[in-house]
Amino acid sequence: MSVRIRRHVPGRAFIASVLTVLALVGHPAIGHALPPPPPNPSDDALKNSQAHVSATATRVGQLANQVAQADAALLASQSQVELRHEQANKALINEQAAQAALAAATLRADSARAEADAAAEQIAVAHRDLDDFAAASFRQGSTVGSLSAFLGSKSPKDLLARAELLDAVGGAQLHAVDNMRRARVDAANKDSQTRAALAAAQAAKQTAAEAKSAFDTAYRLAIDTETAQAAKSQALADRKADLERQLYDAQNAAAGLRGQRQRYEEWRAERDREQAAAAAAAAAAAAAAERSAASAGGSRAVAVSAQSVINRAMAQLGVRYSWGGGDGAGPTIGVRDGGVADTFGDYRKIGFDCSGLMIYAFSRALGYSLPHYSGFQYNAGRKVPLSQKRPGDMLFWGTDGDIHHVALYIGGEQMIEAPYSGAAVRVTSVRYDGIMPYAVRML
Image (tube, rainbow, N blue to C red; front, side):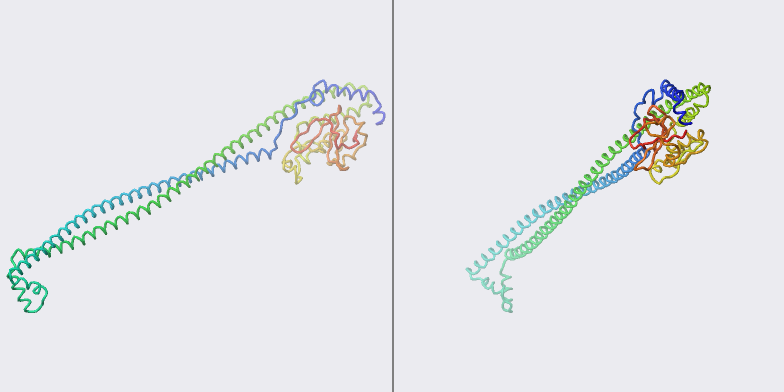
């Protein structure tokens, strides 16, 4: 039966007519080609780019806080510098006051020394007057010659001589002796005051110098602290500016990825509209072909059934790929694979995988469901050499004999498939790299 159908020229002509109609209505895979799809960043890429933006923004915020803290510390260090500066100024003024006090004390000491020198001169004058008086008395033969004994002896006789001397010495001479004694006391007092004033002034000068040295050290420390804090603030500000540039770049990159995704979605929507239009045209052409072939009898039933399989698959163009999804009633939610499919969230998306699309396409024509495994589907029908494939046959791909993919041949070196996670049901050219040497014919 199958041999008669394969040799029946009207059946092949019918299929050719259907393909011709598809070409005339502008099927995207046959009539004209869509432009290649724009880049489609993955959900992970979009998520990671946004996470990078958020992380960078967080780091910018953290650095902004650090910059604010550093600026506050800089202001505090500047306040310390100002305080140290004023304290140094105070020490300088104190030193200047001490220097002025020293100058005044030195002037007073010089004056006191001059007065002491004058008193010493008075003592010398008094000594000369006494010496002259004693010499004159000696020359006149008076008792003044015993003056030295009176002044230096402690015996009664010496005391009597002293009394006689006092009677003999005139008031002027006694006044000279008193003046001499007062001059000596005054000189001693002034010398003492001068030494005290000089010592006090010197101590004040030393204290002021030590205070200024201490404050100069503190001032230098404050200046160094301010310089270091300013450098830290500048370094943080530079780092913050660099991170802000990184944030800007990350935001642009994320926006670029979103733009790519938007352009891809627009391209896919356009592709889906064209494929839907092509599918509708194909269905109309198939219906017309079925009506025109009805008079030819049951010899064309196989061709009509193959086209109904193709039409059923074409009606699912644009449905998302979902690993483990699809049955005889249509797309279903996928299952977990513990790998790539899970990263695309196939287990929570409704769609088809490659073998699930075949189950749906053949379910009405066969009256039963194919197994949901491409390896079993490869052995479910009659194998024909790949060179003899015809629309409605299944094509398979494998690695070292292990089948891993299946698609439905629709003619004109085109096929419809559910390709991989992240994609959707599509029409594309037959890929011969890795293809199995046989097509599988179910009808």
